[in-house]
Picture 1 (cartoon, rainbow, N blue to C red):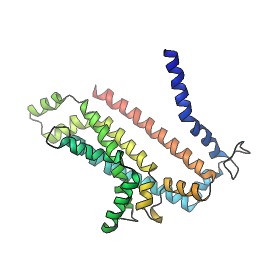
Picture 2 (cartoon, one colour):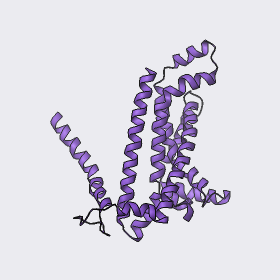
Picture 3 (cartoon, rainbow, N blue to C red):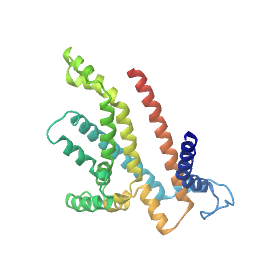
Picture 4 (cartoon, one colour):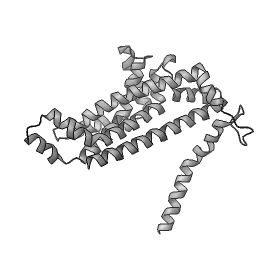
Length: 258
């Protein structure tokens, strides 16, 4: 039975990883086409990402918008998780409302945001895209921070309060460090969600707010280029680096907490 489970797991991972393994080598092709066999090896398409004004601007926009959306979603999501930590009338309704962007189709959210943002003058602005991305990233922060808070023994906080510590000091010295792994995990997922978001960007962003994901989407529709594979390679590499860094940081924080 265990052998069958291992075989099934290997096949499932292989099925999921096969598209990535197929596209990543094409980032180093010297050809103008996405095709196998690869005629020659080159880094010209990585140079294209930086030398081309469109690609370079989209990368910078993705980093700026991703950082802004991550910061906003992390702050709001952490505060929401802290507020929902205690039971009060309507708490479950509020929690369900915060998690709605995870289940509502992005097209519906995009249409609604476009109607509202037009009246507020937020369309075709970086701030508007940051707010839009933070809305869909917020549920990931709420879920991860809530899970992190559940692992905290409330008796530790109560003991600190009973000894005369101010609630703000208790939060900064006890609650925040213990919840930091969940906060960092939520922030990473929020950043990844922002980088990958295309539909909301199509509704809210203008030409000056074109992100890397939107540029890749447009390039696939208009002109398939190996530069798309190079952008995908950077996406995956960046995700691995950030995820590995957060994993090591979480391990360090847990050891210090123990």
